[in-house]
Figure 1 (tube, one colour):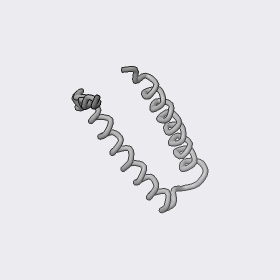
Figure 2 (tube, rainbow, N blue to C red):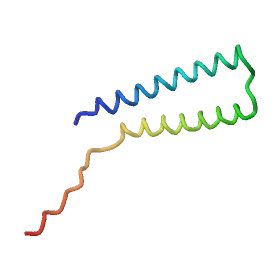
Figure 3 (tube, one colour):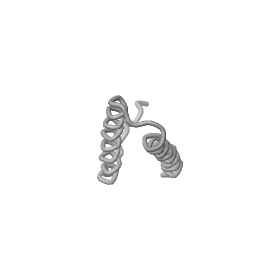
Length: 74
């Protein structure tokens, strides 16, 4: 199975997310302080990231067990 395209897409998306996080860090340090709404968004982001980590780690536990298809009726 060729999964390289899926991993490349995920890596590309994570790279964009990392860049956005760096932009936010700069904004909070140099432009304006965080607001309560920002804090809520950060909490949601952390929650989603933690769920993604669990899902990614679970990929290592999936056993190959294809579903056998029923033969077509003649």
